[in-house]
Amino acid sequence: MGKFPNLSTEKQQKIVDTALASFGESGYKRTSIRDIAAEAGISKAMIFHYFGTKKKLYLYLIEYCTNTFIREIKHKFNPCITDFFDRIELAGDIKFEAMKKHPAIGTFLWSVYEEQDSEVKSAIQASMGIAKQRIFARALPLQGWIHLSFAKMSIQSSFTKCYFGWRKDVFVMFPI
Image 1 (cartoon, rainbow, N blue to C red):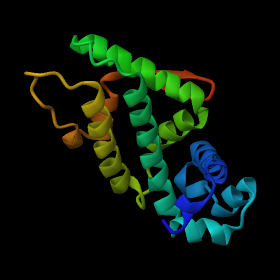
Image 2 (image 1 turned 135 degrees about the vertical axis):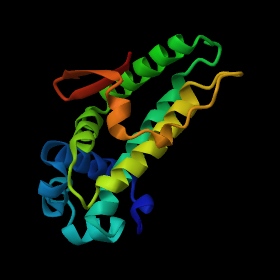
Image 3 (image 1 turned 90 degrees about the vertical axis):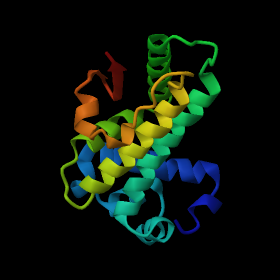
Image 4 (image 1 turned 45 degrees about the vertical axis):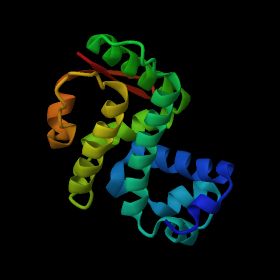
């Protein structure tokens, strides 16, 4: 990832927010690194210096979204809640609040879900499987419950078991 972590937090956030919005609006194939760079106020060469390829930037953003949710869960999750369904509800509330704070994440994740480009499709499925495992491991562990392998679930099958709410730029997934 080059020297991206060495940038100021403000500059990193500007690049990430711009990339999330661009990919969210246009999808992987139609998003231009040139447009992201111009909107972020840096050169196209610097984006490639920081991430190497457009695909690596895209996958970084998926990981960024996962880490954002995990940080929110760590900060707001109440381990005293032991009821499985109450934990699911709380995790949904936490994700909703995170998306309100970071609206571009919702648009981006929706575009990731709908992405069909063969260059990134299998990488998306692998990344999302790992992301689901990491998020659910934080939000849903209960002693004595059977461990479910969310990595084996495809994106499609996990999304069909949810109700989707869409409000402006905020995408919300509510488990049902």
